[in-house]
Length: 149
Length: 390
Image (tube, rainbow over all chains, first blue to last red; front, side, top):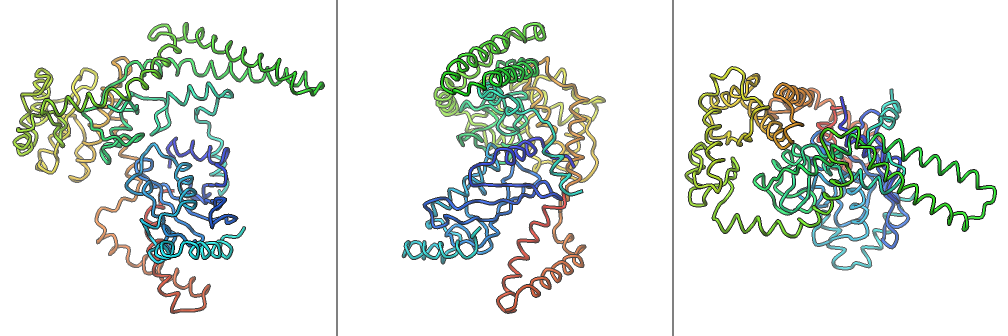
């Protein structure tokens, strides 16, 4: 099975020149499947945490977006308990000009800027809207409990 | 077997901007690459917003989304403009690239060697002073080599590379603001609309009749009467005489792009005729015919977006189509999910049971786990569908 050149190039760059706070390595038995880690951004309740994600490039990639899911539990209004992520560029706002790198950077940015107005985990979003301080406290707790290095 | 795969992947050498040691050359190389496929532009197409893509890339994209992949401005096939200047620049760069790559690497080595010779003194500031000048002159000298190099190797077709590549850059910037409103004015002022199916421009009032007739009756009021006439001819060829043609339509001599067909309105026989018209195989079912024809239209039309000397012949295009079909066959595409589920029920049940068992072993509280593992199965299944490609 020949891997499209674009995927090979992206993989090379991800490994050789990773974005700060992000690692992505392809699986040995499936080169379209990546093990990803994202460091919680400084200044966010996820600071100090290292979050594991899985990323899969479907056959149609780059015409279709990569499939990304958190494997580490996270208390975030746009990420549900199965780790699914509510992010426009992973769905209808995908563009083939985007890359794995840009997607992962966007996810990192989503950790810095939760958007409770477009929730996926409704209970977390409600918590964030009603008492942001307390919700951030829970996010910090979860980060410490599930995402510590 | 493991690690080998990744290692092999990482050691494959695919030309990429990062091949160049100098940032300015990296930028030059990157600016001549399509952001969809990452390759040097192949038959570059400019959209109304000014962004460029390979013809085949943007044609593939536009089937799904009618926005520019770079700026999300709405776009359509009617806006596509070929960009022969950029194409010439890319061709020139392609021929010059390996020489420039070699020269720039040699230059880099020379700089490094000189730095080593001087390092015993270890004084950074005066050193960089001298070095900086050296480096910048060296970049300039490699640049002037750039002008020299493409001359002999390239003299037959294209002017020296730096000129077109520069003009392309400024072109992009200039066009971005101006062309879009113009385009819109033209579309709205003339009351012309693009048929959503075949993309031929039609007077707004006629669009429904046009659609009802299955796009066969072309509008005669299009701005370029000549082209619409020619298109009409082609459609006649495709739809009626197509069957009788021995060799199909020759890509070399073709000048008109193939209009899109509204497959839903066509009977099986008519879809087959579309394939016959291009001497394409009619293997498989209706779905495959349509997919084949759609892809053919893309490949064929993208080929016409190249300058004449770069075009491929029909044989090569057919080979391309076949490659595409073969690569598609290897995908486990499930057409009928119900029968697929029925046929593989045993396997699914086994997998689900296996997953549940392993979960039960890991976790202690069965009630909570039950719910959880079911959810997880859903996710795992959907991924399993995608993964057997490796």
